Amino acid sequence: MDEEKFKTAVEKGRIEWRKHVFQRMVQRGIKREDVKEVITKGEMIESYENDKPFSSALFFKIVNGEPLHVVTSFDERQNKVYIITTYKPTIEIFESDYKTRKRK
Image (cartoon, rainbow, N blue to C red; front, side, top):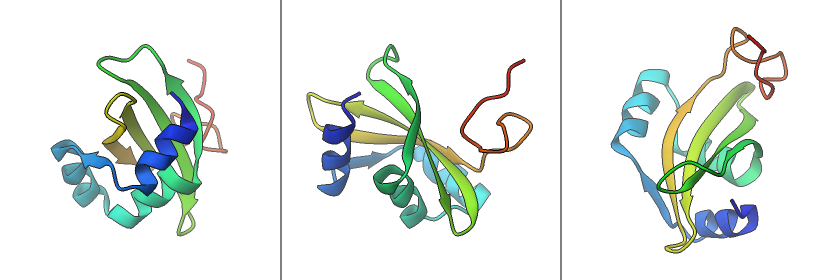
């Protein structure tokens, strides 16, 4: 995923929010502005280049004092970002930095 093209698409508002993400945001008390902050100012911590139909990535940022993850996919041909899901990571799955997955 070309991170610069991705961020430019976000800045231009070329974002499509999947129905699933809105359901999860309501359940988890996550605001739309928080998701945008993660994908514009956060860090890409995992990249899934082989995902289909588009490559995807996991972004991380501390927002309002809490860690937040956002999963996106990016259609580089259409220059469109898809917000797949968002959640607050836990230390059961991630190390205390909330960026590194624990080994099983």
